[in-house]
Length: 451
Image (cartoon, rainbow, N blue to C red):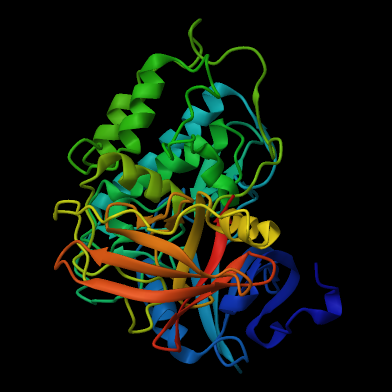
């Protein structure tokens, strides 16, 4: 929390900052609670700072898009747009202040309250989908849902920074959203539908029900990388389980087609039934700490289990840099490559060095990109049996090349055109990252995410 003298001075615009509500410093965004000087009403000021060392004016277009959308909205569960003004290094967006806290904050919920949160946000989505043009939020998650419980549950949907309208023809190679909450079609930059936000809401409710923080959504995966939540909530009633599973279906064909139908199916479900969630109310706090798995593993697990999940003709990289991992398609049949011909370590080698190599690749999972911060959405998996794969996109083999240098050679096969790609991988001293080299030049960077 900043001290008062560190707050920006907006008195000339008629506002006095009271405190920080939230911030994304790397993105140049800070949200303040402030007082409108002329009538002493509380407002929320979202400050966009484009001319700083960590941001750029490239965010200006996103600000303009959000401003345009907010000006067109008038719904009791969306903070009302009030004003905007320029600053020396950006802009400020003024919205109605809601006395509410994000779902990401530790809170204690009764089962019926959880259903009411879903109903409130579904009503917002119905409004957005019936809006002309229709609007897809694209970033529904615990942090972007505020809840007030002073009398009865009131939920508010905030942050339309990633929202898009149906008449927006802008084409971008950048995947926008939050890993673990994006449906497959959004993750791979496919066309979004009215069911896309339903997936994100469903994953948000699962986080709430299972007491899982949004940053730890990967903990919902079992050993086969499948999303699991029913075992964590054995007394959750069947109608609601079925409803929730349909909300988070990876297939658009089996997910609810729109918010109105999802809402209609949810309303008659009785959360207080004897076979429902009874006993202690749900407490949204951090569960027993486990190893955090990167959010994209949720999608990885689904893809691994389905085999033919929708993927793009060219798998995009988050914050695309013009590089890619080749033209990939899940529609191609899997092609078997021979196992690595490198036999298990012999007793004549330095066993500690050999064991170190095997520990670095034994069923490990890595997020890979052109450089730190530019990651491919599907993790790479190395196994000690000499295989390497990225879901159903491609697979290949690896073998030890230099034990003492902690390096391996990798050869992969692209499924779409059958081309192969070869490169060497050198692990960092701590084994938590590696750099891939191709023809002596740095080719890829990766960070370990499992185990």
